[in-house]
Length: 242
Image 1 (cartoon, rainbow, N blue to C red):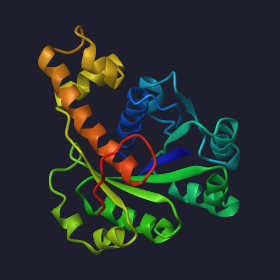
Image 2 (cartoon, one colour):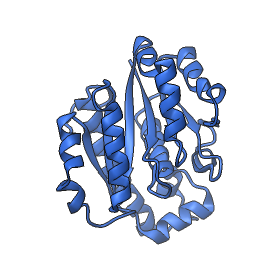
Image 3 (tube, rainbow, N blue to C red):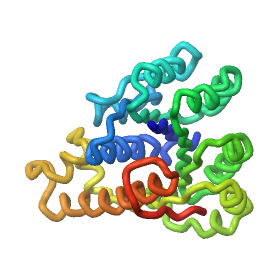
Image 4 (cartoon, helix red, strand yellow):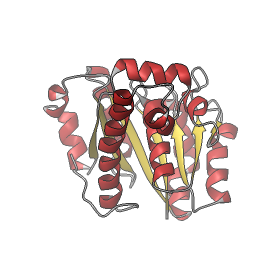
């Protein structure tokens, strides 16, 4: 059984492409076959760093979105990672509802993951609430990611009704650590995959490469636990739910 991951959050700049790249590197390191789709036409970050695995997808019409399902039908043994653009939820919701995409993907044997990226502002929490109301009881697995690179204090979210709603539908909570800005900048300017960032002696210093390795290790441990509890994939450890 394969997984399909929709990496979203609707708001721009919360780390959707970063998370798609991180999940791609996880699949590579864990020897999980996958194909990626980059829906962010303005930045193309997913394709820029993982071009061997990611293709563009047009989110403006059904023809473009249908390519995702066609890829799923072509090889049901592969995971699929979809990096969604900001403000694409309305089009995605219509596509899902009018074609019963969730039911179709389940019939094909896919487990469906909706990833929602949070910064520490109110907007992303309100957008998460919308997602929970629409999909909380639809059989998809909702992953809430507190991105420490886009916020320092998530206490108000954890005290909110949205947090309680997420808990009630069995959403999973992950915390994505903050990678030092200077390291992130060097990775960005050199167009490095995360594996290259952890091993390229010319681009990063020894301590910078070590920071990348620690950051990847912490994220991958959470991914291992998530997929074990889902229970979908690639580890025997346990994952915290909200």
